[in-house]
Length: 78
Image (cartoon, rainbow, N blue to C red):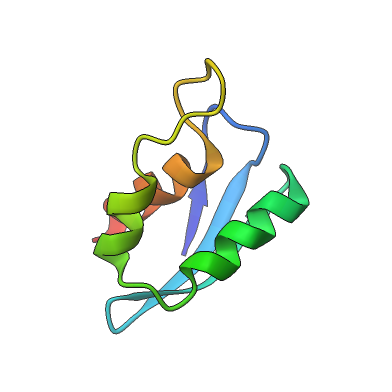
């Protein structure tokens, strides 16, 4: 699945959901090291847990962040 991000440096998130778990997360653009870290941390986690942990995380005054956008992407397909 692919989700177009709004309000962050990254532009898109690609991910898969298998048996209710997050798999193969990758971000296009953005802070590469941080986004690789997020992707590795959520790999294999239940979708609902990722949403609960990341929803509402903010980056400065943007009102959102890459982690929050990942939560929004997962919410859009659950």
